Length: 123
Image (cartoon, rainbow, N blue to C red; front, side, top):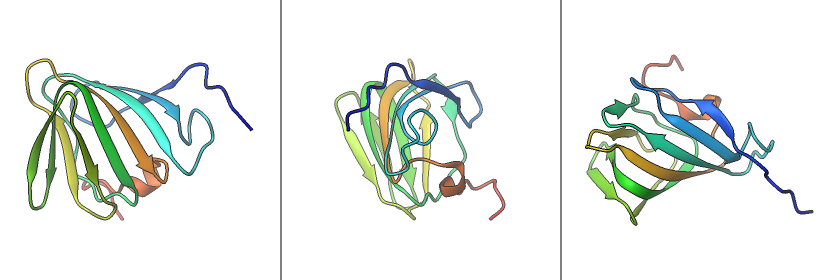
């Protein structure tokens, strides 16, 4: 059965600055648990706590540069590039560079606060 998603739902982001998350497909906007697809608009200087999620995350940068750090490496993902982060890998996202970044995040299974496991949350 096909399901038209007419508009995304805006979700409050975690981090030190306001970041716009528009979830098109996922737990909030479409009651989809298997996958979430969201567009992010992240300002210069934004960062969130590190996390060890229980989902794979696939990130495609549309505009600007997104910094993604793991325990072993640090990546500056530019427009037209993508990165895969496997579940259970510690990761930190930020946009320290001029202009911030606009990107698409796909999570399998869908993003959920109970699956993200941020560093500052009790487990």
